[in-house]
Amino acid sequence: MATKATILDAVRKLCDTDSPPVISKGLAVFLADALKRYSRDRPFEDVEDVTGSAAKLQATPTNWEDQWSVVRKIVYPYSDEDSTVLEADDYEVDSVPVAGSPVQKIRFKSHEPAATETVRIWFTRPHVCSDTVCTVYEEDEEAFAHLVAHVIEKKKASIFLGLKDQAVEVDLVDYGAKSIEARALAKMHLDSYREGIGLSAEGPKPAAVAGDIDVETSSPYVSHLRHHRSRYR
Image 1: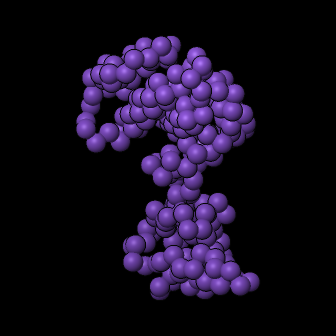
Image 2: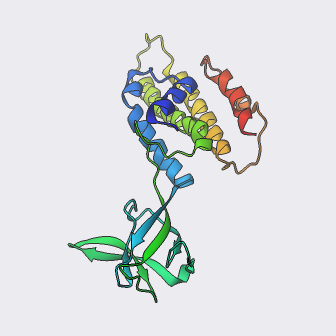
Image 3: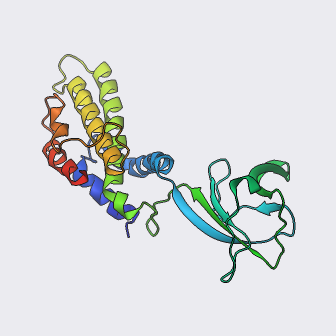
């Protein structure tokens, strides 16, 4: 199972996380930004048993994220002997005021699960990735590392563009070129991520597609990317 550390180790093999220095200090932020995107593209699907409330209004699962989670399926009553999958129009997610603030609840239209009954709820929630728990699907770990690298390179492009505007004529570093290079790498990583989780709208691409981007670059990570993406075909 992946952890935050193993994901970041994979990212370091895909892109330079040490330059500029601000990048290495912001890795946790870049990982969090990538998790938000990944959670939208492929949310984590959870399941939880909830005890009935003896009313039509039912509490949402413990890990439910208000205004984000979506019900995938509800089985009621749930038991080893008898389980019935409810139709989608048998319930709805509703916001009700609790202590002056809106809280989402599940409202059954014709059922009132008793306190002795169990409601099994399948639902979506955002992914997490910490030192001990990482919900990124195993088959997506490599693609997710590309997504983190995309976020990093995109940030680099912005930083280098700002440095270009501040540079003086005697500056030996071409920040404009470095910004263009970072944008190209960001695009390659995003393409690899999308293809890796099956989101490519253009269908399968040739293994060397990354090399088709006509950008002069000295980055040691480009040749790695050109061959790396063939693993997703």
